[in-house]
Length: 285
Ligand code: UTP
Image (cartoon, rainbow, N blue to C red; front, side, top):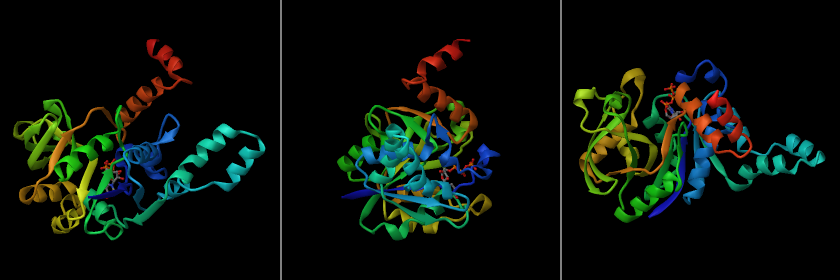
């Protein structure tokens, strides 16, 4: 099984986070001092993925600059003998080569992933990371998922148990448990009414999919605002082929939402040696 590429859809408008996302890509918002997308990329690298593909759109140039060298800043830091910061800002460009594809219109997550089709060969599996789903986990979630993909030789999507009253905010699955935490999926429903939800297992932003999924995405009928939803393609796939869901171990924050973003900043900040104690003090106030 070939599994080395990972796609980061990053061409959405980030409307839940306006006004800042008017000119700063949501994926570049910091959790403490690193942008959201860097957490996702580091997770993918530690899970063994080698090639990063970022789907960008208009106004997202800061992402490309971030993964590149910054000669002027590096020169100034080296003159100041500020080696800590110099090492920090050159680490990513040294470690990762990124390929970019452009989604010319924000036509939904399914469409964004389809934009990467030419960079993935027909016999490959690939990862997908939605970097605004930030997950604090002992073992990186993608790494947990790779184990399941290899064991069952089937695609896997990440799942999280949510409160029954919250199912209308997520894609919800219907499936049968085949091993602790692992489900064989029969169906998926995007944002069901509480009374119609087949479970309380929500789809979260990590997927490992076969290249075959592109042909399913192409058949999806555009929905609201002309958007092509990945969930629709996954549902069609589940009706014909085996696809698994995996309840990951870790804590997920929805950093694409203002409250979730601040929550993640506090929780990640608390873990930091330089500022954790200071945050504890103000929380007590
Ligand atoms: P979201 O729905 O969370 O992002 O999509 P959004 O559309 O940018 O945000 P809101 O809802 O308007 O606030 C999940 C991921 O899919 C990407 C987004 O950039 C985000 O990382 N995406 C979404 C695309 O790349 N293209 C799209 O057309 C839609």
